[in-house]
Length: 460
Image 1 (spheres, rainbow, N blue to C red):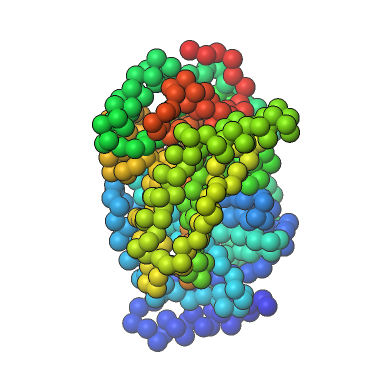
Image 2 (image 1 turned 60 degrees about the vertical axis):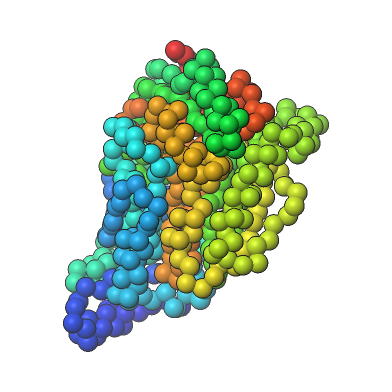
């Protein structure tokens, strides 16, 4: 059922007249066709406005949001009370036609949170520690149904806002002609193997002394590109190669944080929470027989099983206080990506009444899959050992709906692009029994999704 915009505008005017304040948020949803959705998405990705984009081809899901209408940022804290309070205030001051679309769950409040660190590098200066916004425009696709979502302040008028956004869906689209892979003039990765081995010695000492049982340490690869990289083409390539993953990009200012993450932090819909334990990795085989042999080895490898069980135990402990009916399989599954396979255990639980998505983020983020256990001790040791800012790498990105539905994922297999400089990241879990050279090799395997988009020769 399509909304009569004139009737909707009249409803907005009456609501404002009956209120002491005209500061309403208008949330207008309209069905569009595939062509309009494709055109609008291209315009967002090729435009200059800040945006958030995410796609999961295997789930027939994509979402693009641009032009923050209302936003709030915060410093390093596990307390998201200000963002939570803002969202609750907005929900009390909103007029929406969402009721015309039965059971439609869609993003309204978009958020990103960096990995906790006191380090500050100019590379990440355009991204606050936590960053939340209501977009002016969003394009949403679920199961081949396409929607335009326009948010506006009442006193600016929904009619003009919608007129502008519908124009966005039919305007000519600029597309990049730069072919992939993009050529890079310089390549540098750090830390080098000797330095990496020394850092792991510090980690092993802390494990032996029982200060921690696991820590996740990260490395990076820097590229200086010959010319500007076409972000829409990079995303399209990632979507094509990693259909099970969250292909994403958060654009802010002159910076793009993008990647193809295999790891869900959590999703909530109708109080059903779903999360993933994803830890423990082996490469893929060159053929079916070798791939199956590696899979079987991964299933029985003591080091990887310890790493995986650490994540499960953490998630169960954290969920026990905010949920009931926690359910998961005793034996992990295998998640296969094009270049790597992981131990994988889906977990489901019923969230208790009154628990908000912000509370869940505070409980689960960062997980042992990107940090370690115990969490606080691992965070401190990462801060001591690593000499660079992770930023949104190993951070979390996602959205919250008006009905407290939510979905967040972890910023893995990712990179930050700023002008012609790119830094890609990868990490691995260190437990008792880990081998420095093996883990070093694993990081290059995890860098492959990003580095394969570029052509580079010089290594220093």
